Length: 353
Image (tube, rainbow, N blue to C red):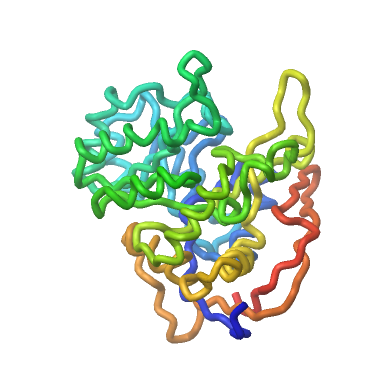
C-alpha cells in the first residue's frame, strides 16, 4: 500500500453514466458530484429512448435543472429513424455522440440494432462532423450459434474492426470492456478507437455475480485473467483507456429479486462513491499513480474536453486516506437505490469537491 495520505485530481470526468427519468433521476443525478465528478457522458436508453436532437436537449435541460453545476454531455440512441441530417443538427446543437445497443442485450435495448450496414450513411456523417460512436460491444445471445453472455463481447470484436476499417476518422469508443480480447483489440487499432472501463469490472469476476444479483450487470464480469488485462492496461497508462462507470441505478426491489419469467435488473450503481472507489481499486493493484490519467486526462483528451482551469481550485477534487463505510441505501419518495459495495469500507474519502 502507498504511504500517500492525500490525492488531488483535476477535473474528473465519467464518460458513461445512466441518469434515468422521473423521481429516480431526481435521486441519482446529484450523486454525480457526490462521487467527485462534474462532467458526465449521459446514456440515451430511456423509455422511450432519446433518438432526436430535440429529445436530447429536453433531457439535458431536465438534468441541468436537477444539478446546474454538472456538465452533461448528451448522446442519441442509434435507431432506424436517425438520418445524416439529424446528425448534422445534433452536432450543431452540441450533442457529442451516438450510442449503439445491439437488440436486447441490456436495459432498454429492445429497439437496438441488428446490422450496422444500414447505418453507414449515418456513420459517414458522424465522421464528417466529428461526432463519437459509442458501442455496447456485445452481440445478442444465440444458442444455435453458441453465443452467450460469456463470449458475447469477443464475438462482437470483428464488428469493431470492420467499422474502424470503413471509417478510420470516426472516433469510436468500445464501452465497458470486460475481456482480454477487447483490450488487445482496442490496443491494436488506430488512435480514433478508445475504450472505457468501469470501476466494478476492476474487482468483480464471474464468481461474484453467479447467484448474487447485486453484482449482476451487462456485460457480465468475466474471468480473473480478463480482470487482470483491465488492470494491466491501466497500470500501463495506455492513453486510449479511461473511466466510464456505467453506473446504472435500479430500484432496489428490481435488483434484489427475480421470478421464473423475469431476471433481476442488470446494472451496478457506483455514482455516489465513484472517485473514492476508483482510487481504492487502483491502489489495490498498484496503479494509484495512474488515477488522474484514468479518471480525467485520457478521456478528456479523446473527447476533446479540456481540463478545466484550476487557478481557484474549483475543479480539483481532493481525497484523503480515511476508512469510510459505503452508505447502505439512498431514498427519495418511493425510490430506493443501493450502491455497489454497500456495507464495505473504502480507504479513501472526498474532502473537497
